[in-house]
Amino acid sequence: MSLATPVRAIYENGLLRPLQSLPLSEHQEVVIFVTAEERPRAVGEKRLREMHAQADAWLARQPVGAVRQPRPLSPAHQARLNSELDRLLAEVDAAMGNASEDEIAALVDEAANAARRSA
Image (cartoon, rainbow, N blue to C red; front, side, top):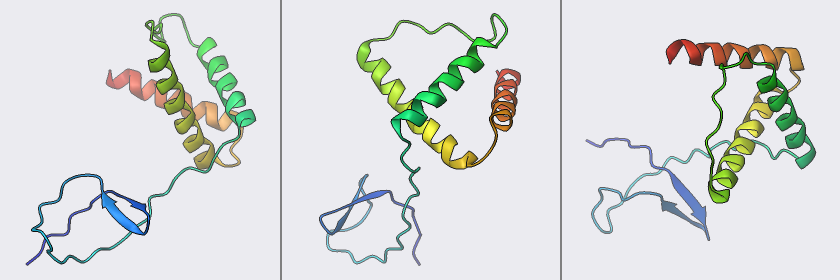
């Protein structure tokens, strides 16, 4: 009997390279089912700037004390966070498609309220 185990891997130079060690014997034969991971489509710099501006405007509308002030970060940490924000914004942009700004704002407000309730 066998156990199916999802394994994340990178495809490079014609080979799949697992991202973690596998509990296999050397030269053990396996069967692989490949599912490509969906990546968000690229978002242009102009769209990212617009989305950052929308996020900043939303933050500015929040009641005093509703949003915690950020702590000082190193430039490297800030760059990593900005990159992660850009990745998340690209996912939101892809998921929302043609949603209006009001629809997106309502969803963001709903998510923020849910996060506050669970905190």
